[in-house]
Length: 406
Image (cartoon, rainbow, N blue to C red; front, side):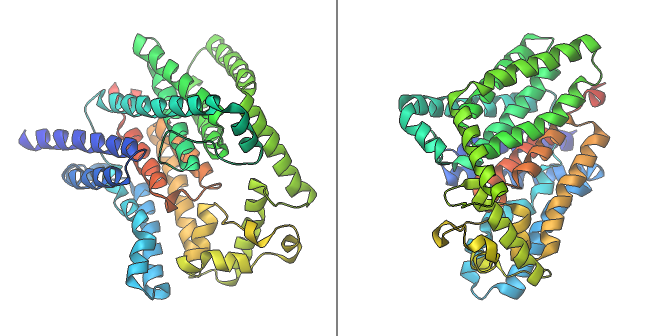
């Protein structure tokens, strides 16, 4: 009895601390770090009692980080201080299996997700207000692929990822509880978050949302009547058309089309966000082919990629515009070899298979969203990205499915 009570209390504390970390990152890196560390500590005892529910797929993420750190330290590191500084942000991923195995009281996780989403919606609405307060100037920034200012310390790409994961979480809860008032309120909050995401229009967050909605949509409606399916499909079309009328999003789409055309036509990619990433992807692949086993080490990733731009790309980009590939899979392969990127990809694939087997719809939607976002941003290289990945997967994993409730 006492063990069960302690397990419940510690599981509750863990999820609350995870939520504090997700919210705290917007105004204090220290609060976010300390909360996540405390969550890891409080998760140890519940994890020990939950070993029969051990998720093998979760260990792939820890293996990915452990392999990277081992290769970095044993082969590439010449300075212990630099090693710690370069890799400290990834250390929480080593302990992610502890957090992914948490179970909480019925309804508690929903309340925590709701609280996190409300906090993020507050920062998003404040950011939207900043945009409209100086719209003409910020519209020019959008056309030049520059980020909009945010009511948050988080870098705009990771912020859009946090926002998109909140959107997916509230959509799931709203659809799950659609027959009661709570569900309608959750859908309303999801609509606010989605609108804010489209107004702020960071492409990584938008892509994460769209990819995540696919499994969420199909798994949510597959057992509904044809009438409900048609109504949902019609509402989705109407919502999409309405979103397309958002001025900032229309400008971001225009900018994206121009960006894509530079790649398709082989013209200059200077000051083109996707175009610069595209040629960086090619340079990364060329780098990986030369050192596929152990990579080049973290401190050499940028210089190595810069040195491996293909000849036909060199004439289309200035040296000052050579950027990192913003792709976790490629960057980790350049840093630590092919196996590192493969392990990271397998974490998502195995997690999605687990979600299908256990019918954990939200977990699968978040994994798909994060897998897609990892193609366009190095989310494991910043604290906010690590917290987004660990935090939302932990919350989604602790939710019980309808089948489990029965």
